[in-house]
Image 1 (cartoon, rainbow, N blue to C red):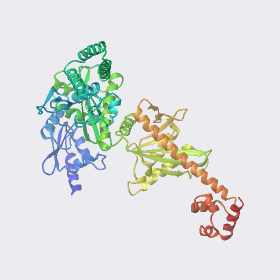
Image 2: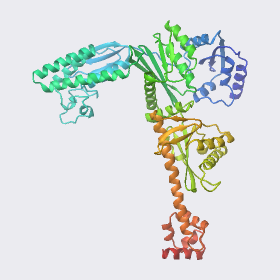
Image 3: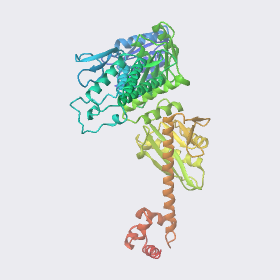
Length: 609
């Protein structure tokens, strides 16, 4: 039934015109589950129902639920874009990127009583509290509350006072780093605490400069009255305020009004981060977790359409962190919504590139939290994919290294990193079998050919049956070209790069054959690649030492009369170590396959050695 459905949809899609328009996917119930636009309807829609496609899981799920589709021809691609946005806003199809416009008003809440607290709030329903606001941005409120607590050393642990006061208790780290006055341990009186809250509220209601001036006057007065402890506290508050003000300069932009949008992706999910700049300063931020994306330029374009469909306050400039599909169309659409020209930019240097990177790092952090991974793993994979021009971060990375001593005991190691972490159950060891002597290029060719022959013969997708997303070789252009030759001959299409070391044997760059890609400026990617290179080298050289030690044992055993290389290997296979062989009885040696006279020779040899 499924094959018949796909065949029917495929045949219908092949009859579509090569014209711009909007296509609407329906489920069996008739529900609209996806709306898309196309420059050429036939080409775009037929891709969904073709054989052997490489769609993401999300697209595959959508296609599996499509019972029928309809389409609307438009006069231009721009008209199709406007219609697509309108239909998505109207029907909210489940397989489109859907964003909720949940902007409301936010407040800073100040409770009353002997031990008042300051917190962020989304409502004003507590009659026993004072509210400062409203603010449009929840980000601004949370950031402001956090900074005020640090400046005026107010607790943010959620404890209630005086119930939680215990002079026998020990203050937490926040007290020792001067972010809290530790009322829980009786380190501050109720009167002094209320004075701190009063000053904090005045700070929130007034300007920063005004607050600093008032605090400086109070500090000087306290010093004149010989209240040195109070003067020191006020001095610390002034210093904290000025540090906060200096830090905020980092998050400023030469453009007074702009939005910055960045995307972090993994194999199972993605995160869009939006930085909103007002008056040249970061005034708000939003983040949106979505399903895995199939194509990053297309995903950026779809997100921009969804995000600004819900908003009327369009900035004159939107900066994105990479290539974006339909850039000119989006600029035209945004310009019409705003009423004046809107630029969609992809910064590549200077302040703007720095802000885009900061935005992307925040997206990576949120995505890492969502996936339960370390930020370095997610950011490293994302950064590496961008540097190497991969369509998405590599889930499985294989790395190879050769190890020998002047051509003797020639071996190779293969390590696998899954989601940025070593996947040791997939590590493999290889003995070089096709030749003797030292030739790293031929050794690498043999190893890769054996590995992908196993892939072609595998019946499951486990172990060698799993095709890697990226191959990193410990070596330069020579190793790279020799491996590419094998993969081309075998019809294996996997991105391959070499890891180049400097004179101190540290990772310096990645080579694609024609040129080197510097990675030291990209900290997350550099850390990941360096870790992979060190791990594959450790694994390969460890196996080489093991083989060299084993071969030296074989050589020692062949000194015994009647014991050749074959019998020596059989003994080591059975007893594992020379020490165990030396302690074996005649019967144990016979059971290991040694003739009686050879067993006697072995016992005699070790009794005199």
